[in-house]
Length: 126
Image 1 (cartoon, rainbow, N blue to C red):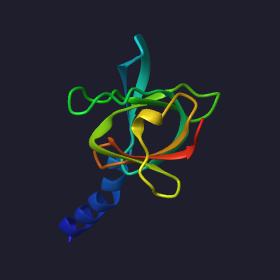
Image 2: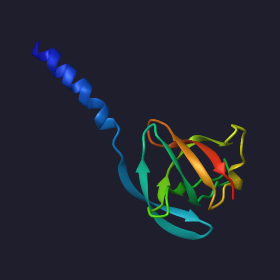
Image 3: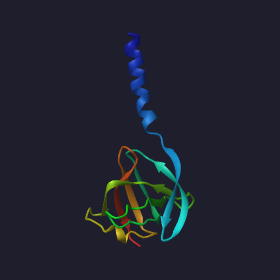
């Protein structure tokens, strides 16, 4: 009986442990400038904001830099790490060239279970 109660209690608490965010910092290089921005790992969430810095890189020669997004003017920009296979699409679901993503573009980010960006939806172009 005790084992059943302990197992049930653990099952109720487990989702709370995995849904928390972890803040880190990372260097973001964009057109020769190095900025320091906090990195936030968000599992399974969707984030909407304005791109502050992004360099898509030349695949497969060099990997893309993290994407720096500011959700509102009164918050600090947050740097998100891109996954290996990131899909860039417009709001209608059509493929979008990552080289057209510029600072000021409104995007919606989709994440995988490890907190890496797997989908970038262009909400509003600059």
